Amino acid sequence: MKKIILTITFLFITFIVFAQEFVITLKKDLILTDDYGVEYNYKKGNKFIYNVNKNGFGVSIDEPLKLKIYFNDSEDNRYDSQINDVYLEDYDFKISENVSKDYWIPSYYYDLLKSNTPLDDVLKYEKYWATKIIQSRYDEDVTWKDEFSILRYYFGDFYFVVFGRHVYNDVDFFAYLEEVSDNKIIYNVQRIYSHFSDYKEKTIYVQPEYISLFEKETPFKIFLTLDGDYMKMYIDEVSEENLFQTLIRTTPEACNQIEKWIKGESDDLSKVVMPKKLSVQNESSKATSSTNVSPNKTMHVTENLKLRSGEATTSDVVTVLQAGTRVKILEVGKAETIDGISSNWVKVEVQSGAKDRDGKTIIKGTVGWCFGGYLK
Image 1 (cartoon, rainbow, N blue to C red):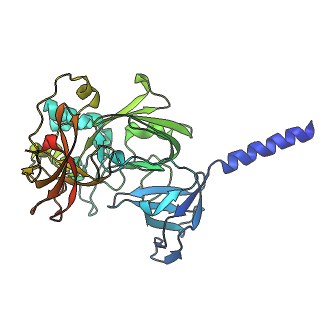
Image 2: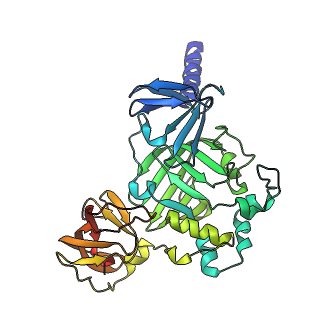
Image 3: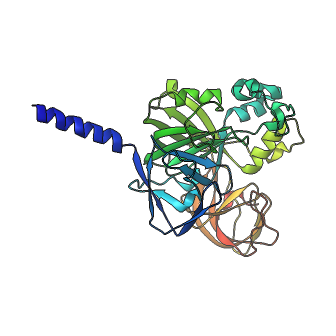
């Protein structure tokens, strides 16, 4: 009996110790740099044992996103790498591109726009700015509007992050995927960190609304349900009482204009496209008439439109065409009803002067598929 008890105790301790360890593996040869500028050469396939109880984790706001980790609580062992250069071993689920490549922001920003409420009402949702005494790097007092940036969510295969531009205003979730489908994502959250330049679990700078998550015992689950441009975040289970946040899919340009509006600066809210719910679209029994698309016809895009590798919404996104972009139709594909519009998928060639949704030039002659219902 004594041996059995000792064996069970040993197994329990072993589980506790090793259950918190994960293997982060390099996808390619890399030169990683620590905070002192010292470079270390690593080969594709090199592995790092990451322990959520001993090590630290953060994702910087740089584009592309950078993974920041430190090992063994040592300031000399902190490394920087693009997040897409590594993967979490033994966890095969991948976040879908229609989630990972888009910006997601809390829905209350759109609620403020719809109601045209006073700009200071944003403080009702983000108490961080209402309570923080903000000082600039020159020790001059500044207002919250000088430092403010809207919160944005980014989702990855073993993390998701809430960002504001202010250096202290981020929440980093180290979490692996348990389920991914068209309308639901489940994360198993192993640890939450605040303030990426420290990589440590703490709540001193975090938005007050997120402190309850820091206080939860890990691991716990976060459920994301998707409905068109809407995403709901639930803690532990999908139920109204466990709803933590409603997010809306948007663009960098829309984020920029909303932020300017909140800060009282010059804005162009016509660039902010209102979100759509897929469930509402599906309930619509009356579709609008189809677009008159035909080969060799040159048309322009009526709103920001995804150019895809194939004639389906599940195909890879080549780029996002900015509204007004001219395209030449090369081929007419299958018919479909999307967003209540009946039309055909069309293979198109991008014409000169094209730009993507971020204002970057798209090379003339770029070819891909798009839905003809958004061509005119």
